[in-house]
Length: 149
Image (cartoon, rainbow, N blue to C red; front, side, top):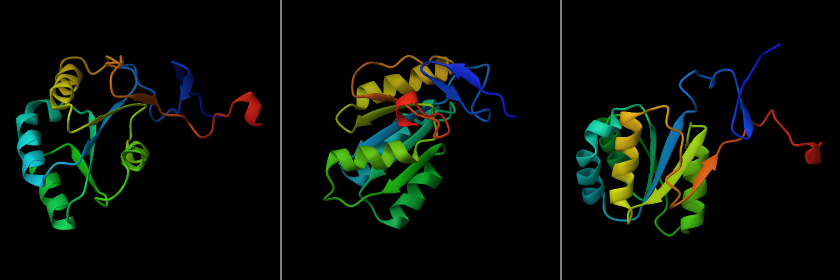
């Protein structure tokens, strides 16, 4: 029988349970142009290498996605239709995130995104949310509440 490591309001599956704390993901909804995204990712390069899971949801071509992921290590880009509602883009990003705690920001919050990345680089075990923009705790599908059984 597998054992799990409890933290927060859920049980982490053994594969995610670490002594360093929960894994964090950052989902960035990017509605501006690809050139601006490329420049911004370059400015965050040092912090991106810190190991935080970074998912960018962006309306771009497959070739642009491949180039962005190649040029910016540690970033995964999801190609999304430009006409989708922000709510749908957030859902796509959260589903693709690999972390236990998922921070969601958009391209109007570049200063805060930089701060989140620098904080993760300085202290990967820090699981506090910044409080603005939205934070989600991922749920283990194997753990059900008493009301759903």
